[in-house]
Image (cartoon, rainbow, N blue to C red; front, side, top):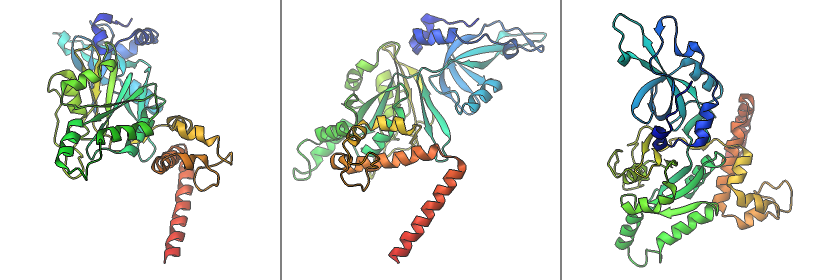
Length: 387
């Protein structure tokens, strides 16, 4: 029987839906908890939340204490077969094994993660080889943090929107460093500075994001940022901060925590990019009763989406496609394309690039090899024409 301490775990984001899913888990087999060489554990299996994931161990929290645990090999293999793994935000069951001996001590118990509660939401990405990597689980809001300095990049933002779309997570665009933008505006001459650059950039984001996506501009170092994000910080809510290195995720985490818990660093002057100060994902409890997951910048940002999910992320293109002259219009060079006439050219190029990646991820190794051969032939022909 799994122990679920509802009161303790509420501050870690436990909901009735999660508790019901945990209670519905199959009974633990005796072999998963004890063997003939191991004494019966004094601590019954209990529900915990994963707060950090490291190469060999996890950090899990039961509402009272944060402990280190290992994943049972059988569970690790089962998850690997499903092309996934435990992620920060997952709910899991921990069981302790107590080694028998002449002087047994409860402190010698070794905790093992023996079961994973099926996540209610899950965000994953793919690497360059198409392999899937989990990012976070069981989050309600994904705050997509992008700086208003040289970190501002609409195409990368669209990738993050595609990453969270279809995962059951609601995205919120958070434009950080509003104070930096104002400072740089004061240093420029009137001829160099647009009438209102902040409003212009917010408008540019709204034009590229769905109308249902909230867009906020904040100073991540100010308590006003916490006030602006208050609607997403209710008790029991979990939010994850996603964005490039140097965007201000850890700074915003510290502001929400009201304490300097996460390390922060300066950004480079020429491109406003930061070093990977945050090297691993970690879950923190907020004073409001919500939880926040801070993440490092993703070096390889390939959304784990299929063509259907990607089309939903670019909903405007799908709606306009119905007005194209040809039913099978690819929105490239066909005459009478309603999409090319109405959609920003840069957004359309980004859509085509993401679509190619999504299709490649569903190909077999042989199909990828054939596609690479086709592109080599085309490149060779193009070089010959230029010669």
